[in-house]
Image (tube, rainbow, N blue to C red; front, side, top):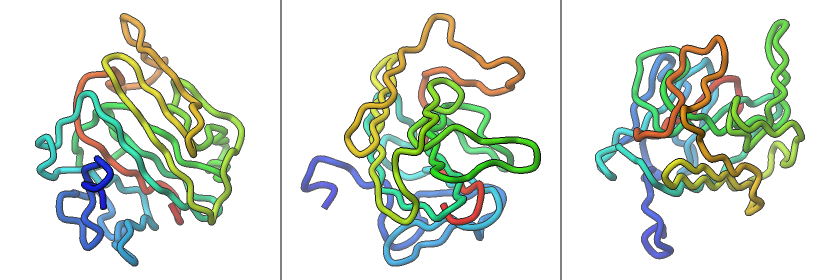
Length: 185
């Protein structure tokens, strides 16, 4: 159906062909024709044939359902790495009700452009489907949640790098990665 409405599917609905998990590979499964993330931290990187897994300007739309306490994300302009959180690229946060671990309190909610433009209010519910749509054009990133524009960020020159971070967070090009961070994403 993706071809019928102008979209190109990156996931075939049957298996993880075209995707490569890092760290905890068992955190990713295909259940009822959908990707399911549940388990220890892992990132699922797109390695398929579309644009040779190298995207610069794009639109991506995902349909997501979370369980209570889920903490996940959609990375873009990133690159495969064996372990840890991706050092390259940006993350669109998926977190409706996760509160953090230990003394860390996670307040960034679903549709945040993590650490750049944060949403602090829960706008969608766990156990219900919602859509995240992102568009990257040149130095501009837009993130919509169920059709509502929540982030409209234009990267300054030089790019903003959060203090204390080792991440390479600037608009360039790269692949996508999905994040399994806490159970039930």
